[in-house]
Length: 185
Image 1 (cartoon, helix red, strand yellow):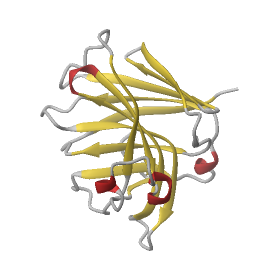
Image 2: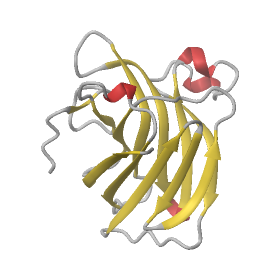
Image 3: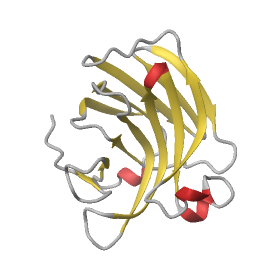
């Protein structure tokens, strides 16, 4: 409904920041295991803007409620030219040897797990689209507008619990609506 009553921007605390992560921090949310999350989003109008869904997220406070010391989890973004990208947000400790060294001290250390161009999707700008992600054990499944993109099995060190949220970069404004999280049997 757009109220964001149990979510907040953990990157800077600034609602106008270019890089923002809004997360759901309801009681027990960081303990969620297997679930399906669906959300509607509007594709940004400008090139270079990115937005996506954060799943299996964990959060450690820096000292101020609205700022994170460390954030981990998976991040699914829809990029230009129909790319569906799955990244892992890792702590500096997790990232040793896996991530780009220039990001080692950054707020989040994005490591691309898989990236594919999905010809069957058409991400029309200024239109609403649906992104769905299922996390079950170490398997992640991704759908865009009902089109199956791919499965990924994290056989290295998977995140098995965590909450959901939205992440943006250089997206002003960013539009998300109708997020639904459903437990999987």
